[in-house]
Image 1 (cartoon, rainbow, N blue to C red):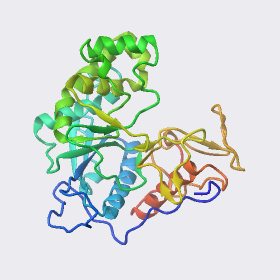
Image 2: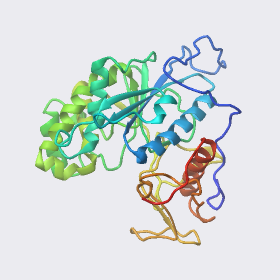
Image 3: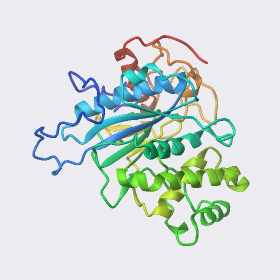
Image 4: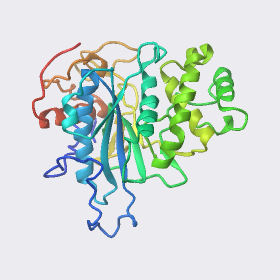
Length: 354
């Protein structure tokens, strides 16, 4: 699409399915002849934490999940589960009435070693151990709340190979310190098998998730307790926990550059070609900064128009202003996907910055 024009609408269905829990798979449905046979549906697992910040992100994620499922010709997009961590004693939020939700108690202060992201592998282990995380599908797609689906994701995985994204900051051989840490925690037998991958987005067999979960938690905690690893990996530490754990339990990933795009005002802006998305997922973790004329602001300079999810700790306002006309396509696509969900979802509040 022309970077000077809004990205094309992805709203390509008349009616969305109301609820897409793990039982809502039509096994008797007839699918087009060009669809894979036998059908291999996957479950969508969204890991989320409490609070308004991820509450609004979850609503938007679920909206686009329903859109993707409605557009799926081949019936590969299966059920949905939100895995929610809550402080002990806190009541569930209203979204539990809209989507299948499994609640796991948040690690208490101190138990999380001062790193709340450790709740992600911990919640998966607890949900599996309690027998709560049970799905009919053989495959599972693990996502985070700041993911947006750009197009229908077919089941790209196989029984022998998961699918992941090659994060540019997750290279196991990037420097001597990283190499030494990976060797230390993966062990001599497995360190060469550690891949440039994180735990989300990842599409794998459900049995693979069960196999890696405990090791993912154990390695993540061990890395956090190690001063050198903690300093080197920082906010990426739990991602490294997964990549090391996956190598140790023998999970291999097919790394796809088009699995997701992490766009900003500096990179990741070739979103579509001839109106068709180049990627499956847009991950809006980086900020967008532009002048009023649509010129990208580089080197962390502030612009007249900006979007950074961290500015909206309570709510993303209904009146979220569109970007200037001449910004890169990444900003237009992000704004449109957010805007489409906001105007479609009932009772969306207005609001401002934190």
